[in-house]
Amino acid sequence: MAHSPRAVNYTLTPKAIDAAKPKDKPYPLTDGGGLFVEVLPGGTKAWRYSYGFNGKRTKVTIGTYPTMSILAARNAHEGFRATLAAGVDPARKKQVDRIERKSVVAKTKTFETFARVWFAEKMAHATVRTQKQNLGWLVNDVFPQIGAVPLGEVHASDVLKLLEGMRNTPTKATNVQGILDRVYQYAAQKLLVTYNPATPMKGLVAKPKATSYRPLSVAEIGPFVEAVRTCNAHPGTRIAVEFLMLTAVRKDNVAKARWAHIDLDKRTWTIPGRTVGGNGFMKMPEAHTVYLSDQALALLEQARELSASSEWVFPSVFSRSTPMAECSINHLLSRLKAAGSCPADFAPHGLRSTFSTMANEGGIAPDVVETCLAHQERNAVRAAYNRAQYAPQCRDALQWYANRVDQIVKGADVIQFKAA
Image 1 (tube, one colour):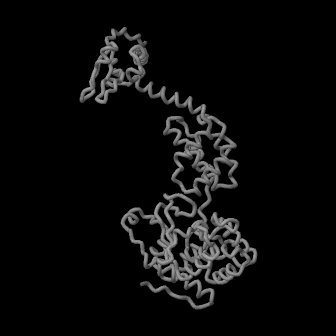
Image 2: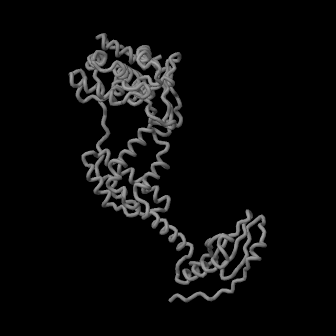
Image 3: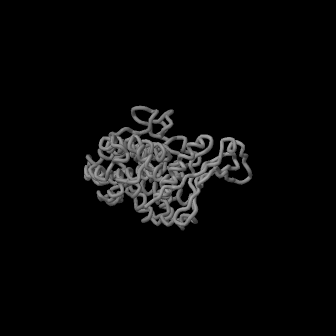
């Protein structure tokens, strides 16, 4: 049975505390019953309570003087002594009380309110595309379901219901679960919640295996290129698709290409890394240099005439102040598929696979191929030591590839790559 703590004869006065001057090291002014004021070198005077618990001596901070008066400090001290007498560690109780107070605050915050805080604070350095995609999922799929629910009251059953409704879009379901998990991890870091309702739902909807985009075969390249050049799509879109093929970059890189990043004299196109932010930039932090072949430069000359004074290499057909939409490239391929000039299962990303397949079969070193594709080294140790940029080799490889495509379109024999 716990006993009430004995009365304490407190001794400090406001005059004594006010007169205490800081020294090189902290020192205490004892008040009684383990309560004291610690005078810090910077001049702060902190109320602390020193006590023994489970055979160890420890202390807990109560407040600072004069913000907390002598009377308020002593009242708090009596409360801590009663807690100790009940067999509870005062410092632990203070920590739990603080967490519970934050939990009360969490119950007044809706999920949407905090999710927008998470987005603003944790997604600031993501690419524009990632930001747009994640915010879109939140606004269109998550907020209508649980946005108005208090942050601390969202249950795993709510997440289950949300994800079950996305079984027809498993990739989105997996990504939404990941977003919810990160939102609640951040809420836990801010001590707003102690329960993550998204964690049990990981893997609920099986994510499909990554799609391997098939390349064009040698027999398909000629008809494809001819169809691109002669179809009734906008000239800028036709040029963009052929430029996409010859540079082996990603679709958004071409759609959002800027003249400011192209050096015609050096025959290079430098795509900034993602840390810069913005559409059309690389997926990784590092910039990527594309070495422009003669054929790619010829396409840029045509693009310059069409883009006029626009900052974009391939401006929108509706406004020169905005870049081409990526869907323009998709629409062109859809036309070719409808006309039978492009395989039905072919996607724009398959042009990167086409370069990789032809380059590897043509005898180009795998490291050079991967560098042209801006693929990161998967082996962390090798990546740390292998700083080779393969600039001359990449330039030769992309020129060889452009020549090879020309030869195929003209029906010539295979050209074997000759390493420098």
